[in-house]
Image 1: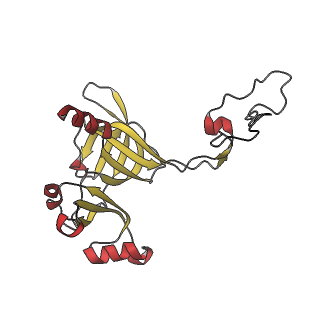
Image 2: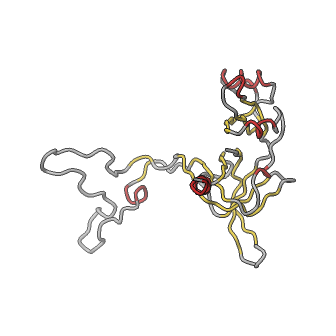
Image 3: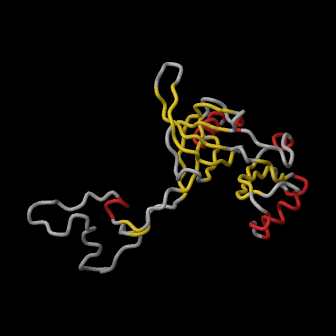
Amino acid sequence: MKGLIGKKVGMTQVFDADGNMVPVTIIDVNSLIVVGKRTQETDKYTAVTLGFGEAKEKKLNKPEAGHVKKSGAAPRKHIKEFRLTAEEVAAFNVGDAVKPDLFKKGELVDVTGITKGRGTQGVVKRWKFRGFGQTHGTHEYRKHPGAIGQRKTPGRVYPNKKMPGHYGVEQITTQNLTVVDVLTDKGLLLVKGGIAGHNDGVVIVKPSIKVAMRLANKKK
């Protein structure tokens, strides 16, 4: 499955052919290159390894540095492998720059990113609890979680109980986002709507898995 590694630049708006305003997220893939290839003869499967974000070799760990040295590609901060067919892999060479035109305007994609960290939060912000009624008699109980156990067997708190705790810094995939525009000369991909993560966060763009499953079911 083809894919891109990029950087979330931020959000803006564009106007479509009918004059409607469309909110879009800008993804920058300018420093994306091919850092390795997997072939059926040597690895028993076919894939291409992409690297994003310029880095100094001394900043890489030993496995990453060894991989870069073996392939002879420039060091990269973020490396990810994408499974492709043998014909698709043959079209790539180590060191080649990867452009956003892997995807076409109007295509549906899934974008994976790491959500913003919000520290330790209560149940109202973390789990969207309604909170307690705020009448004249309520005193310091507006955002409490309420009872967490029971006074009977088993007399304990069940696992996965929604309670206060760390919120954010989770991998989230936003599915079925439309590619609004592909700016190949600028190395930018514009997708409709918001995606997980803060500005300058690293994201991964792949074709929509739901569309692929739908096509696979049709072939059956």
